[in-house]
Image 1 (cartoon, rainbow over the protein chains, first blue to last red):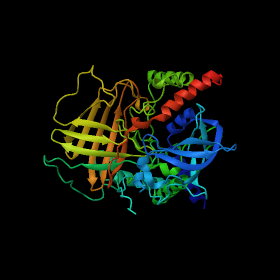
Image 2: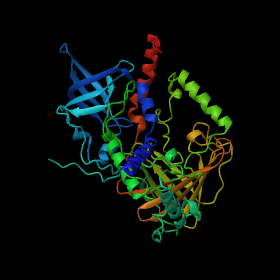
Image 3: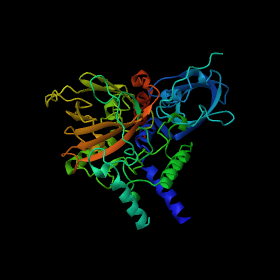
Image 4: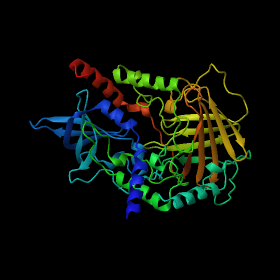
Length: 141
Length: 323
């Protein structure tokens, strides 16, 4: 029991060294940790670009007005390798975003956690991080 | 860990058949079967294809593993299990805006095939040697400057944020958070490596011509390749002062070795030789695995809104006096 615990603990410390620190530095410069946002809205556009994909959503404010937010994501290349395309997130889909607002005060936030309204994560398929999986043409309806 | 287990690990490592004729470096798992690489038209080993270097093996060996060169089966399982469990979305620590969902990342799921406990293999403790005092001072000065001027202008941000050059492209080529893909193409008198992050091509002449004159500097250095048996050896010099790979300077002399050890494995090894930056040369080994997919375009410059946001955010904080 003790030996197994030691292996697991050793494994954990083996991995801590692998997490890149650079990523957090850039996010901290772009987004304000003191301005958390929780947004619910309909997708109006999917910007399928590098270095970051941006999901545009129309969010209804408390006063009934509408604001279009841009939510920053990662690289679309990873999603493409998992079999998702630009059209996988249909216009009009309702999503919930947990993130932080941009430091410049604009209606931009990082998509720290993006889910459907029922809590399911977006872009989940197999969790097989097989970089370079063959790109599959989406099925024509 | 018991001394008996440690002794058997050492014995296993030393018993491994050498690949580069240096017994302490030979990966036991990969040397198991003799295999001859197919050849290109000019008789050299065929290294062509798309290769990926994604791995969960850490670059440097954690201190607890200081003499522990190779992981046991149980440890590999535990480490890979731990990695799988870490790929779960979690709220960030307080004061940290966090990043993105795990579905955006592609760091790999397995340790390297050799099961080494770190990618650094020399020095023997698996850790990068210390920097020379001048290099250390330079790094500290850069850090101090960055604290005081985090975003006066684009030049204060990293080359990666500016979409100029990604740290993982190097050279040397390093695993990163995603898009860990490289395509090798061989022609007569050159080998070319297309790097996905962020759309660089390293064109490596193998025609025997010497390096560029010393006053000509290139951001990815000036490479020259030659074959030693079945190993492609790439010698790169003439770096600029714009990149500092782990503290290296423009005197960096990088030696990379590529050898295809089985149909799906390209053994990549690099030695950092930079006497003005590091107290001694050091070496890392990263087995690369064949990918069945393509390199996708990473047109970093096409929508780099993030850099705008960072600069505007800094200007706003200045106006508000919050910095």
